Image (cartoon, rainbow, N blue to C red; front, side, top):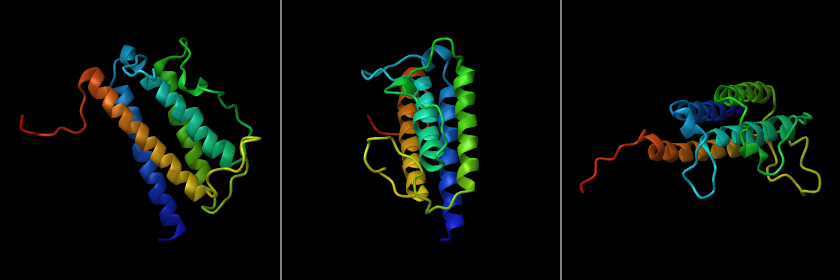
Length: 165
């Protein structure tokens, strides 16, 4: 597989998971988007903000492109300010995804990280190719979390098993 075919396959897979995340959250009523069913306390809308700031922005814009962008501290990326609308959070994710895809389309898959957190040692991934795989896996993992949250919150199911009682 050529580098361009690899890039396309990774970006297409990532885009499918990004859409899945948005579809699952958009299908929820607003109160459910901001509520949590789990002891950890994460909320569906907070997960979208995490993917926006801690995943897409950090890995592509900061780490790979070396852009000087605003990054959240601690668990700030998981927290949606009360005055930020659902639509604004979802739109910010969609926009960040468009921006990072545009960046990735112009980068060599063997590009090494241009920035890493000061004092944090070496980056865990050595190339854009590895970062793309990481972000795809993380986004898919969180899409699965949203599937479970959605089923618990409103009964929405993507997988229905016909099992005997």
